Length: 352
Image (cartoon, rainbow, N blue to C red):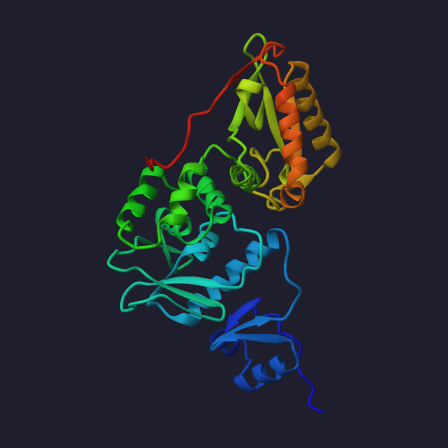
C-alpha cells in the first residue's frame, strides 16, 4: 500500500495549489492527502490542513490565514470585504463558525453570488474605498464598517463598529459618508438602521459591545459606557464597564482580558479584546483578582450598586441577567452614593 505523507511543515493551515507546488507537493500528492483526510479541498485551488477547529485567539488567526490564502487563489479582481476585511484590519469577529471569505467585485459583477466558502458581493455604482493590507486589496476601515452594518445584524456589526471608532481607525463621519453613498441600495439599509443608534466607540471590548446589543434586544435602557466613578473629593476611583447614573448602579463584565497583566516594562495594557493578548502579557490570576476586588470594593464603599456577569450569562441566562439588573437598580440610591460620576466624550456615527 502506498504510504501517504503527513503534512509537510512548509504548508500553512490554509494554502493554495501554488503554495503546495512551492513546497514540493504536487497535485497527485495533494489528492492522496485529501483522500487520507490530512487536507480538505475547500474549493478549486484552495486547501486546508485538517485539524480541530481553533478557539480563542487562534480562531481569529486561522480565519485571517483562510482569507489571505483565498485571496491568493481568487486573483486580483476582488477586494477582501465585510467580515473578512474586518479580520485583516484586526477588528473583533463574531461568535460562530468562520468559514466563509467575503470579497467585493471591484468591476464587472452585476450581482452578488455565493459558493461554498466564498461570498462575492457587488458594489453597484459605488466605487469601493480600498487599501492594501499584507499586499492584499482590502476595503478601507470605514467601508468595511459600513458594509458590516448593512450586511450583518447588530450582534456582529456593533462590536466591529465600536472597536474601529475606539481605536481611531476611522471616524463616525467617515462611516456615515460610506453609508450615505449606499442609501439607494434598495433593501440593504434596514440592518444599519437598527445598529447605528447602538454604536458607541467608548466601549473597550467585544463583550461590552455584545452586552449593549443584548440589552437593546431585551428592552433594557442602555447604560453609559465606561462610566467614571469619583470619590467625595472628585478623585478617580475606577471606571466601570457601563452604568446607570440615575440609579447609582454600574455593570461589570467578566472577560479573559481582566486576568492578564502587562509584562514588567511593557508600558501598556495586555490584549485588545476578548480572548486576545496572550502574547502581550503574563498570566497572574491572583494579582489580577486582588486588583479587581480592591476596585470593586472601593466602588461599593461609595454606595454604588454593582451587577456583574459574563458571556455565559448573556448567552444562557436572560432571566437571571434581567433580574439582577432590575434588583440592583431598584436598590441604587443617588442619595446614598457619596461620590460622583463623569462620562467620557461620545464616539458615535452621526446617523440622525
